[in-house]
Length: 141
Image 1 (cartoon, rainbow, N blue to C red):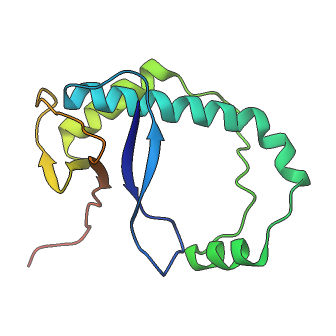
Image 2 (spheres, rainbow, N blue to C red):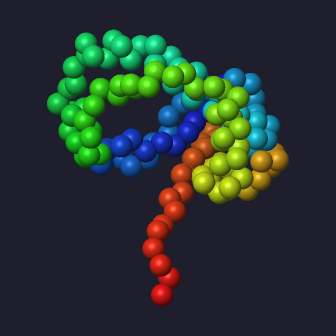
C-alpha cells in the first residue's frame, strides 16, 4: 500500500515540508500497525542501502547536492562504515517504545495520533507527518 508522508529535506530552503509517496506492506488499521509497517519498510531500505554503499565511492556529487549538504553542515556520499544490517524486530520494538515515551509524534492529516491502539482509516488523500521531538537542555531559574 502507498501512503503519503510529509518529510523535510535537509538543507532545502524552498519548501520546508513536502509529501512523498511511501510504500508499506499491508493496510494498517491502528497506529501500532502503521509504526510497524513504516519501520519495516525503512529497515528494508536501509539494509539494501548497505549492500550498495560500496558503489557510492565511485559516484560524484553535483554542485546542487554539495550546496544542499553544505547547508546541513556536512558533505558526504552517505557512506555507512559500520555495514551492520538492522534487525526488523529490534527496530520495531524501539519505534513502538519511542512513540510511547514521547520521543516522536505522528499526525494524520494534521490531527495528532495519541495512542498505539487508536484506529486509523487511511484514504488516498491521507498524509502522515512524523515529528521527532528534541529535548531541551538547561536549567529552570
